[in-house]
Image 1 (cartoon, rainbow, N blue to C red):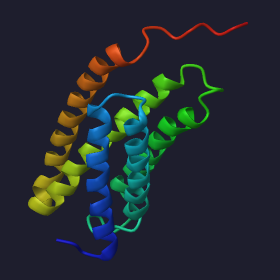
Image 2 (tube, one colour):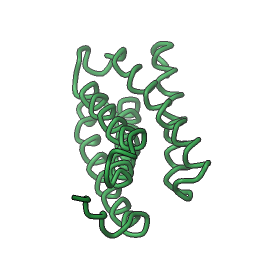
Image 3 (tube, helix red, strand yellow):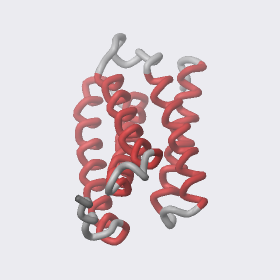
Length: 161
């Protein structure tokens, strides 16, 4: 099942990130649990993305999954920069919520791709990944929008000036 030590680290950190992401999404936001588990999620995702750049088994070269790792890193940055600079970013919580939520959705979409690489022949792999990713993104869109309605303030305060 594991093709290399890097692959094992990639898998274990992805499983940790999936669990931490679920805990953050399913519990109260902003408290100590959210912060601790959220930082665990970010650390695990940094390992997932770093190790992804050393895995070339599916295509043999830098490919679509490596580009998605870059998108994932951008999503993490988009979610964490507002937290770290919240005193200087108006509406920081909106940026944090959406980027981090999409980070978790992307992780679950990547889970399907990884699972299908192990279960399906390549002739069925790409269509299955496309359908699973689209379904995951659709479900993520619904959940993110529904939760945003009660997690985030209805309107951003107007800028002073």
